[in-house]
Image (cartoon, rainbow, N blue to C red; front, side):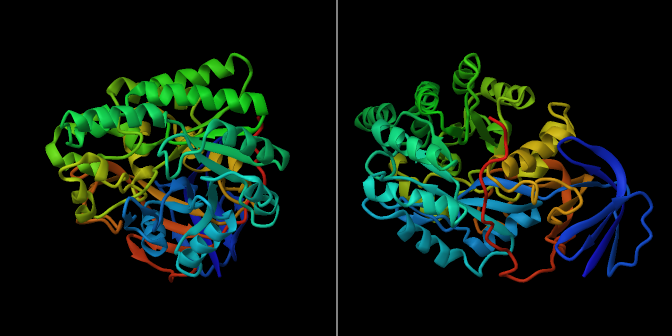
Length: 460
């Protein structure tokens, strides 16, 4: 099958021009002006943006957590992503303490294989680094294409590892050319503040936010950066939320250390006023929590400065009934919120249209940098001859209102209910097939494939 896209404004992380794109099979075959080629499908993209398919480097699909499962599985989650212009997601395989990495991998594969609409890859979340699991890292990187290893500096007793394990992991991953990522918040301080609030009878969702002040992120960020500096491992901080955390990264740059940083769309467009809504605030109980307007401004600036390289969602939705398990105790509210569908339209509407970032920067943070950092470039993350034909035709004028009544997440509320945005993915092409066209699904479950990743092509 072949597709000819005519007259679109092609925007990559570095380029911005008008041309035609000819897709033959799963890849881009030709780019040029006024192409006169016979094609099975011709799409007129006049007046529209043509951008690379989005890559969301941080999602949690069908994840067991706090007595529930995140409500989007691989079918619904990757389909919602496609509706929003994200063609590839990277999910987290979470090792159970006392068990092997491969046992966890097989568990996640059993849920994902054959069930996805979009393409997907895996990070390995390390909760128990020991001499046995250390031996698995080489094969995970070289045979399975899992080149990134996530750690948690919080959630003691279930996910958190200590600094000794962290350094051991870093040394082993460094040896094989991988990258270590972290959830950088100080779990001990958080646990202390949680206990203090519970003892005082402070049990509403507001105290989830108040138990995780900015210092918990900035301290852990600095500690992780120092360990990465000592071991010289490629390092990446997930879901950065705060000015204090960003300043720790800037301090590292003074000694010529490169640290990759991710933020999430909710931290750019929402602020801590969401925790002033009584129990409805449970919708925004996530870790780290939504922060202040000054942190929003710092994050937008950090994107432009190159301090933040990637934009994710940390998509981890739970149904409202699951959230209500914490109605009388905020520590029982499952952490996470829906958002996988809205990342690109929100960053265009709130970032590009308002002049905070450029179109090229939008493409970079939503696609290209993730492809480079996580070993999928140049097959993914750009528009060029020979790359995967993952392409979004984006209508920059389309106004619409975000709502649980219209979103494609398997979740009965929206984190952005009533939020009007301008800009929407109109046609989404995945590896040479039209996947979404004006809201209509054109592919079948199982078309999405596992992406075996190589080592990072981003220069440290």
